[in-house]
Image (cartoon, rainbow, N blue to C red):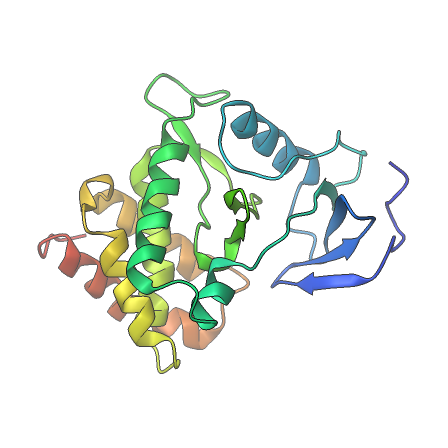
Length: 229
């Protein structure tokens, strides 16, 4: 590929652990700057779910770099950006996220047994791009195989952390969470507990974010009928 160690074009965006650079009109380079990721493994998961019809960007073959992943350039705002612009409401956002989780969990696992499925484990509004052809899911660095309850729990906890915060989008996040969990059957006590544990151990989380996890967990449980987690 020849991209490792150099910047191919202008910076298009930055997240907590990675930066995205322009290559040309059709492709971008996502570069991990923190050393957490494995670009080849992430690209393999994306290629697998895409082969089963799941909406993700196309990826180029691995370059041998753990930090660099070349993928299809997508046009459109993230779901979070569309929400902020008034182009998407909370109920619709939650319904889209729920549909994406259900569709993903219908994709067979690459390595696991018949009960396992592919899990994204970071599916939230800033990781969904609304293209003219429909939503596309990005940022697969946390993907694993396992039981779907953990994926539902992770998405619910991420939204709940915002919902119980003092952020201006707390109320919309609550409404999005409510829409996500309109039918909470995908969520399990075990999945929620593990999602909370993993969020607490996440090195990219601030102390303030970790401090919200207790209230976030209680909020998610309220949508499960008050079940213990």
